[in-house]
Length: 79
Figure 1 (cartoon, one colour):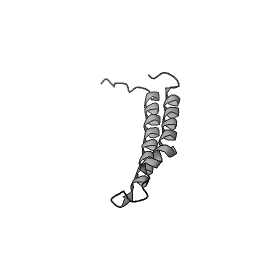
Figure 2 (cartoon, one colour):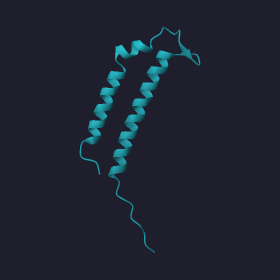
Figure 3 (cartoon, rainbow, N blue to C red):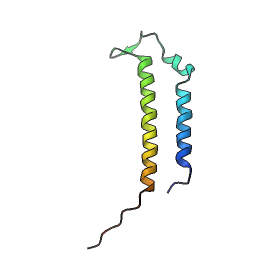
Figure 4 (cartoon, rainbow, N blue to C red):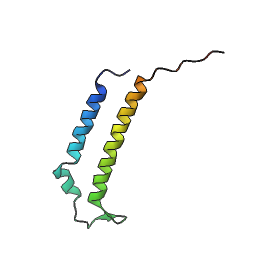
């Protein structure tokens, strides 16, 4: 059992990480004007969609784990 409020703290932490990852300082590292590509997709686009997908998956994992913690335990059926 997790302590109360841990889910909220994790979501706030993920939000702060998202703010950091979408800051102009980090985005400028990956902005190469389309000259650097992988499979024809510019590095900046890959970075933006990768971070976006990471944040969505992170929220999903946090919320799913909270749901699992709230489910009642399965009871063994004795025949």
